[in-house]
Figure 1 (tube, one colour):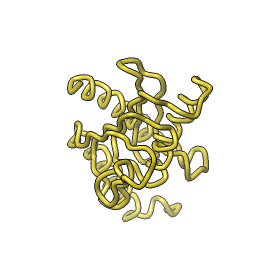
Figure 2 (cartoon, helix red, strand yellow):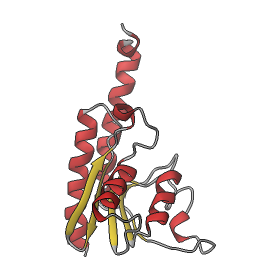
Figure 3 (cartoon, helix red, strand yellow):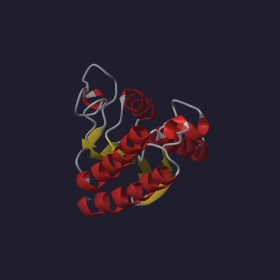
Figure 4 (tube, helix red, strand yellow):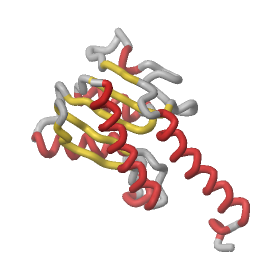
Length: 161
């Protein structure tokens, strides 16, 4: 399981790289059933002009469409950044078995950092969580993205300058 988690997180990092190349916040997601990939995506918030265009949501939509079912029991989500509240809610609704994430999200993490939504005993479903898989690589692509955004803002290129 540990090696499979690392392999799938590497693929999620590839998806994050696609987002990075498109100027999106570099987050990637892979959904698996056993060792088979059933969906993959990356952030597309800006491209879709859709605040729900997070990697997790887009991967869940794809998997649900393919399976013609809004429930995904037995499925594992691999995502490079700790899911936010919106994504955690979707994970619960889809009844995912596991979530494996890389970097912790200190500002919006709803799985371990700010909240523990997927483990809340008051809810009717709980999802197993594994955190910190390839966290350095997952954190580095995010840090690089935001560092570059700050440089662009500092020299005024994003304001037509």
